[in-house]
Image (tube, rainbow, N blue to C red; front, side, top):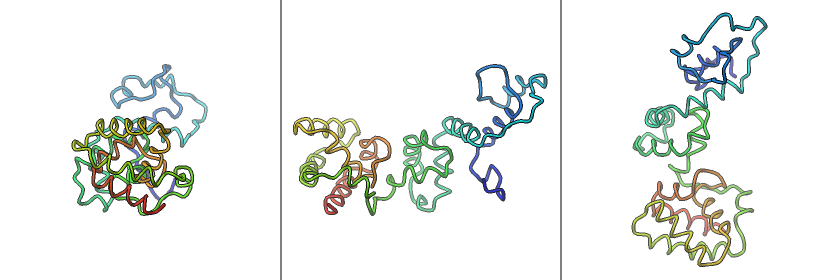
Length: 220
């Protein structure tokens, strides 16, 4: 940690800090680790405080913060995320809330959100070289060119419909799903990472999905 900053500045929730501090030298004698302030007041007993020196575990503090992150309102997290990133100034907070729902399970702090979700807001300008090497084969360009009109023809651009349409087309081609799904992900994200491809496609919309596929096609 940067010793010039406090836990709040590092992005920790106050409840998480209180919770892990309570466990420094104290154990409730049960398996429970997450306590509200009211529960701590009720459970805390000086007789259960260990007289030996407490061991500080920075990884455990992050674990507590991750747990509290999952309990936070997506809307409140979205508001905090929007304030922290100027790129989101003109983005509807309700859209950001939907993004937060998809990515917060992988986050420990709100400042992790941008790295986990930037592709929901801006198209990838370049592609990860390792992802390209793994995803792009000799027939990838022609297959993606065939996929474009399939995407174009979807009138109700809903996640389930996109997923069923694309998967049915892949099955009809009698090819492995990875031959399409890996380059599809690279086109949308810029790497082989991120949440469900069809969630991303639905969120960014049909035209942006097509634009990103075309960008990858032109880059091959």
